[in-house]
Length: 185
Image 1 (cartoon, rainbow, N blue to C red):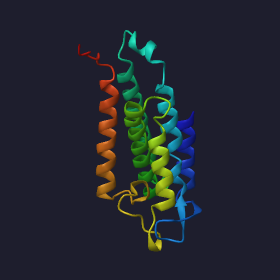
Image 2 (tube, rainbow, N blue to C red):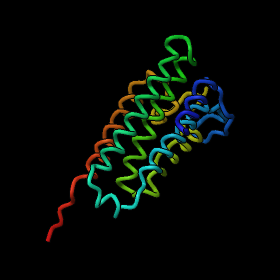
Image 3 (cartoon, rainbow, N blue to C red):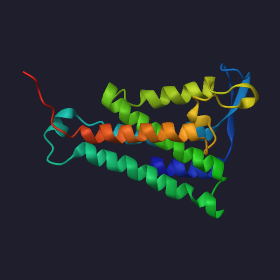
Image 4 (cartoon, one colour):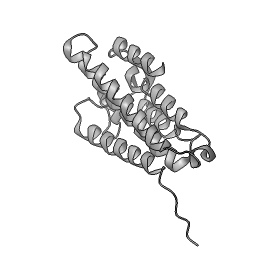
């Protein structure tokens, strides 16, 4: 439901922005809504993954692996839906590319946060990064800083590489949560 609502927002808003004051060089910037909208499905996915560890420890199936597959499927379906922009049926290709990349980035960050911080705090890293990008991520003439990957152009190689690394690492850490822990004596 939340992912479908995100698709509807992403397909309809295009480059609509929110005017926000900037502390990173510009006096104010029109922050694209597509920078913040992907937080909703990323948080919903990760919140759904937060089950009681006791239940997962006794599960007869690979619970974390299933969670990783669901996250990957959501990212793949989002890429498919946003590819409508290439056929002329959807939004402009630039915001659609940002929507796909930002959903992948935030989902990967949440999966890494789940491993490092635990379930309840797992969504803090993507939210903090998105807010930092929205507040500090733009320099003069509203150009994104090198580290502000969610605000970067969809074809930006550094943003694409960083997103790929974070997603792969996040999925890997999620899959490895199913492995039994060895206790040293």
